[in-house]
Image (tube, rainbow, N blue to C red; front, top):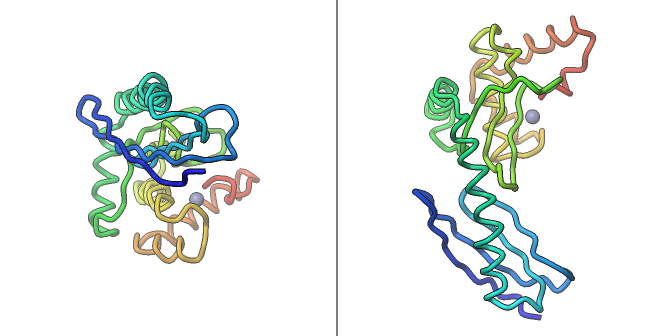
Length: 190
Ligand SMILES: [Zn+2]
């Protein structure tokens, strides 16, 4: 089995994707892939030759990613984007990365979400039921989701890093109060 990693690049519109192709002898039929910023990691069965991999890449994977990213960019909310950039610069030294951020009306419990690994990698969704909530609470939720890029779980490191946003404790208290009044578990909200 050949374990070497091959790389390719694909340029579509104004975005350049780097593609890493790894052979995976456990795969029997077709490729598996994931997206991380603009890096596509493809695992391909050992029997697939380069031409077959390129065909899947150019006819399926890249078009699917580009389509999803264009859709997310169309839905990007300028005001949320500006707030996310402000928070990133002010509290996190510009260290955080995301692709788009938008309000959504279809999250029943969660206040925010950050997708990772698929075609919508890096897209942040913020629940529109917070539209009338204090700005510092919405900022906390934005910061919370952005920090998940670095720390996917609610680990000690996650909370330590998120504490750089100075109103974290106060915002968590607000959310706990709203959840308590609604008879819900705030742990299920974020
Ligand atoms: Zn979280």
